[in-house]
Image (cartoon, rainbow, N blue to C red):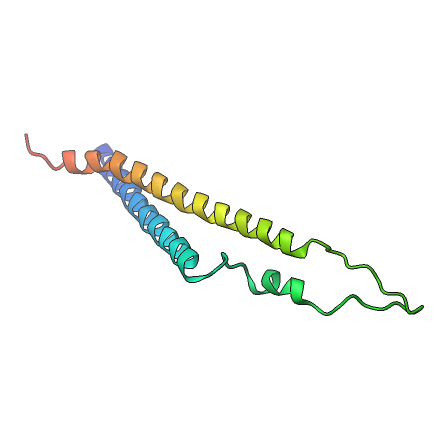
Length: 117
């Protein structure tokens, strides 16, 4: 293979990768927006949402009520929501920015190579 054909394959591959990253970032961003609009609170998985609604604290053999492990369950859920939302937004923006950089950076190599002198 000639060096120009290797360069063409490499730049085309990176350009396509950039477009794929743009699509993934945009779809994740859209998903985040829909979740923020559709739900009152940013949704977590099933278990984190249900863990504060578990049965009351168990009673020990002596008849004493065992203390609950997580006293501030609702507060920890809200913190977990904020962390998950932040992670999702950061991942979405990272995919978008990386895709734009790759697509724009290698677009000029692809479209300039087709110009006839």
